[in-house]
Image (cartoon, rainbow, N blue to C red):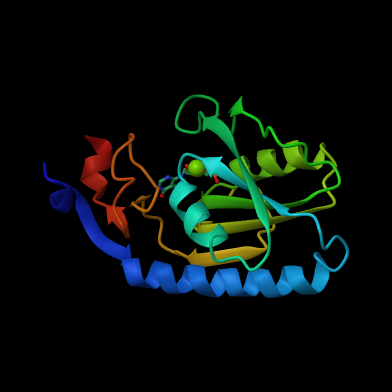
Length: 189
Ligand code: IMP
Ligand code: MG
């Protein structure tokens, strides 16, 4: 089947993503200038992206932040569709020491909330000076644990499986420049 035949519809167009990323970057820049950089003006913020889905969002976002940024990645694998829902395995931790640093987590999508809750605990144990979370898409329909997200790009209320702009289904579709809903029959097959 061709890619187009597997997609139900485009949910967020390429231009909408670009515009929203710009707005988020402006908002984050203003907030950090006011509340974070004032305390530690010479230290870059540590942006931490979640592999692999967040890479396009991460690179687009941090290039528009109006302050110095270092970046690193965390990689967790999830077993949520297997027998142990919510169980996560840490495949790559941060390499930059973040104690006393200002950390901004960049995630692609928040669904049940388990991943973000786990990441938040993992990072808080390292005692950062501050920890904020920015996600491109909040999909609250299947939320199981409460997580506070500081910056949300888009909220998608429908319970659809999204692909593109980093989001995958079985490793595919990540390089689509837009976010689309996958046809349900593709998931079952
Ligand atoms: P959570 O732990 O259920 O919040 O899941 C978060 C992770 O599941 C995300 O980082 C994605 O990798 C993946 N995920 C959740 N919903 C979708 C979706 O609609 N499309 C693609 N990946 C998703
Ligand atoms: Mg992910």
